[in-house]
Image (cartoon, rainbow, N blue to C red):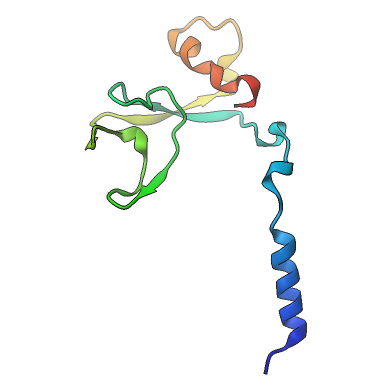
Length: 104
């Protein structure tokens, strides 16, 4: 026999746990670090690394691939916001610190 009190409690917890993620402000989601793609053969070079899942590769990092091949020496590197304080003099700073502008 079903215990309705436990059922009601579980349903309430489940219902209340489903929040609206868009209710959070950009500042709440802003990070002080970002992982960036280093793979000059990929269109993702210089973009934020994001893990994906596909039928053929399973769970994988798209940064590591180009033209359906795994590219040797491709990697994701960590950029921390404190490395982007002006003046931006190094080429890697000029090319990548924009990821911390406007809450990206």
